[in-house]
Length: 261
Image (tube, rainbow, N blue to C red; front, side, top):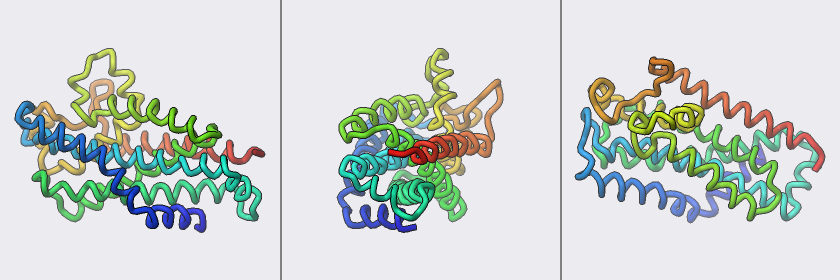
């Protein structure tokens, strides 16, 4: 609990982190969503800006979860991590606390973007909001767990900063956050389906646009759902893929931190 509290205090005491983390998603949303809305017509009752909104939420959540783990590298480089590892609390508590704190911060950042939904004409009721926050939290936990796993291997800040774009950019571009995955070439299908963020983006899109995509599923270009072997995967299966990756990353991270530094 103390480790998670420490992560939250870091975030609360640095409000600039929230503002800077919103710049990139909002820029994409304004430039691509609003700027290209006249060039990309609405399809199946969904505008291009509405289509981008869930992808931008997923983008900020995953990036926030991964970025929060840079503090692990920071603590290792300056010796604070070693002191925590030899402290009385078990190392498992340290990892879980880090993931819990980072996930809460990432969830809060993603939820802030959700406030733009009414501005874009997206209708949200209470159940949709709660389901969206649950999906955001799932993505945040998985993103933070993956970030912790990467941070467990990296020992210098510069190395982690170099690894981050190599991980995040391919994931984002091949997740359907910016354009429908059905419009991508067939040879990219393999990479799309092994990308866990594909399922996270689709979960948020199907939930957030649940009142808009009834026609889009059958005739719109902005169709929701990830197809595999000719069948559209249920949301529960997609959530299982995302949660499975998070559990695997967490297990490997626990194993890494269980070894002597």
